[in-house]
Every structure is written in structure tokens, then in C-alpha cells.
Length: 57
Image 1 (cartoon, rainbow, N blue to C red):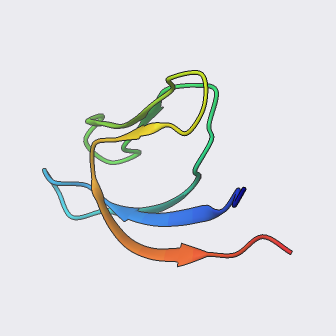
Image 2 (cartoon, one colour; image 1 turned 45 degrees about the horizontal axis):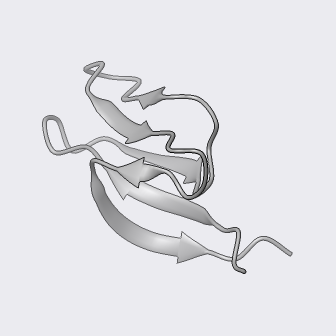
């Protein structure tokens, strides 16, 4: 069961952020406010492009 961090890119402004794949809170873009990640009770629903998966060690 991988629990990783993701580098995602906002569809609206192209800003990149690092987020947790199982975030329990909604994550908005820090630049334009667009919803990037929505919690679902397990793995979060990603509303942005995943640029890179970063393994948490």
C-alpha cells in the first residue's frame, strides 16, 4: 500500500505543488485557488496533472 507524495500541476495556471496522495483535507492551488485534491476517505481524488511521484521513506 503505497502512500506517496505527488508533484502536481494546476490546470488553470501551471503552478506546481507537492501534496500527499492520501490527504484528508481539500488542497487548493496557492496561486489561483483552483481545487487540486479532494479527500475521499482513502486515496484522494486528484483534479490536477501528476508530474512526478515522490516516494516517502
